[in-house]
Image (cartoon, rainbow, N blue to C red; front, side, top):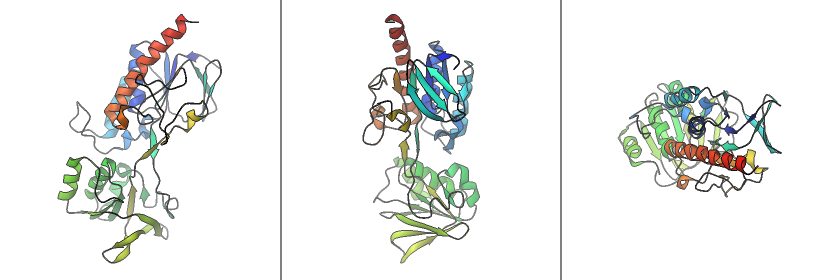
Length: 310
């Protein structure tokens, strides 16, 4: 079974990596499990609201986090966790079948992109349907793209696609966008971007690749739009399934309920970042980092308490 860690951090986005930096400074023996380069931040084309960097790509920023973690000789295990059990210690089983043991846990596994759940979405994934504008926008040079969503990530995706494509439809189910005003202004100024409000995509069609999308109401007399690409940016869902069987309390949206110190209702389990109800549910890199730091301090206090009372 091998060594027993004081702490295992599940998730290697901003929350998990910040927790690791602080855990190292508190001299907590720990392991990080997760892939930093598949985190949502890594997919962000441009980040302009993280202090210290006027403008930086998500990939660059996460690399800086990783470098700082590794400076403390901490191992980042690029694996997915299959299950967590609680016996004397927490037992974490990864995809490779290995089991790691720990006295405490920080769950910082973030969220995954929401699916539209319409016919054709699965079939055309990678054949025109995408959840990552940063990865796929360059393929749409001089083509027509549709982006679905109305928050920051959708508007950022539309702006990025517009730097390659000849036309971008920005489709949103509500009557106005809910993104930051600065992004809304940039959309208005961009002649290539055509907002379509109060409309849903109900079907994705094509032969070998995506050719058109079907709308639930007519746009310029037609219920279909010919497009070469479709980027789906309709928010994300917390990856909290892993902790359900441990009895960790979740809210109605599947977010882990945390207290001010990032503790959960289960002793020894803490949570940070997009997966929690913390920070007034304001899902930003800076709030994820803050919760990561707080959770590491809480683990430090918890381990000291456990040591004193055992």
